[in-house]
Length: 558
Image (cartoon, rainbow, N blue to C red):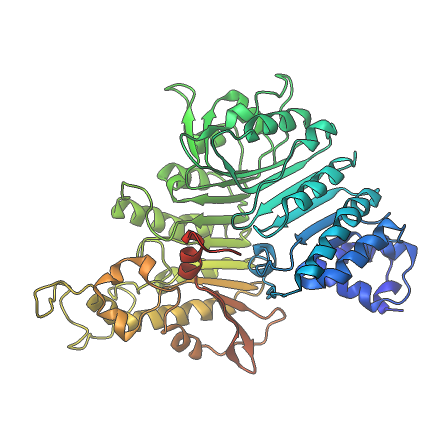
């Protein structure tokens, strides 16, 4: 018997909360005999993963569940990770924010094998889900190679469970959206979490009326995640989705994620926001007052004493009012500023305004919330205002509770304050230097800052090494090569990959120390880990820019 099974069930259950699906799977494989008290814990979460398990093992598992396997009365969480053998991309949950290095693999089965699997799946999948009598949570990841009928079978089967409380669907690539009507026809009314990621609203779409109906029936919704984009025309109004809720009922929203929505700020909305602790807003989410006297979003939250613990927002929502709001309280745990790769709006932000906001963040906001911050991500399409520098290291070093940290270290901060070394003749070159044809050479300024880049990387990694709880460091960078230094297109960030060649020079200056939790450094698709007293490249994948190009390409498939 595994030593873990000798632990009291209460302690084992506490441990299981920190275990991933993979951990639980390995745990089950190592246990020859499982006591009933332990079974309800180690069978609490199961995953259907065709990529990882293959056709035969997937069907065998589903058939076992259909035939009264001991696990069926214990499974509370079901994850559909892949329904197709050709899905070679695992969800971001497994690769980035959980800091687990996991890569899918492409399998090439014969068409006859695929056809046999599909035929068996038609029966085994709904029967297995129907047998899970204690199912509380369903999470689905689908790519464009997953069959629509299989997705609809999962939804229809799960909606039949009266005790279902959580539903999430993540669409990868061009995958089709699920038919959500079974949530209405089966009268699902106990949902406290409802999440749709990368869904689209287009001409003829019935998604909005379906969402209105689902939300109106589930008054216990505490987590509502609608990462929805609009294909054509104007954005949908978020307030429309709330129209079916009785006037005497307010949703106990604690977590809200919004994509392309217009939101009207009024007293009714603030009633729904009364318990809000987490807010994530997309680039095109917009807020407006119901009249000229209505305060903006951040002022409205402050007036109503709604103090968020988790904020993840895109650049249009970063303002002086936000900084004033963040300065009005303590206890922020997660702060993420997610800027696009480049400025995608017609108007460009004022660099001076960006400088002021960034200075306020690093000099005031971060120190104020340093005792509670465990996740801090500050990324930007602008090179200078938001990026890490030696001067900003001190404020980040105060955040002793940080577990995840992400910053920009792009083209190097101008060497005016932090470095007292004299510039050489080559480094003292005027920014207005021209080439033989009288053309401005944008790369010349980059070349003079390569030393600063190395210095900033060294300072950042050294500071990160001294944060006792830090597990992951994300560095957003752009590659500088001898060729790109003199490339006139270098000013366009989209044309550059995500990591400097200078990165390894900065890493070589910092020897990783002995840590209880080894630090992982993520740069684009690369992952560096401490090994034998040095930083070792453990994994490599497509850069941020390469991913962007692939997803923008019409012929790209997952």
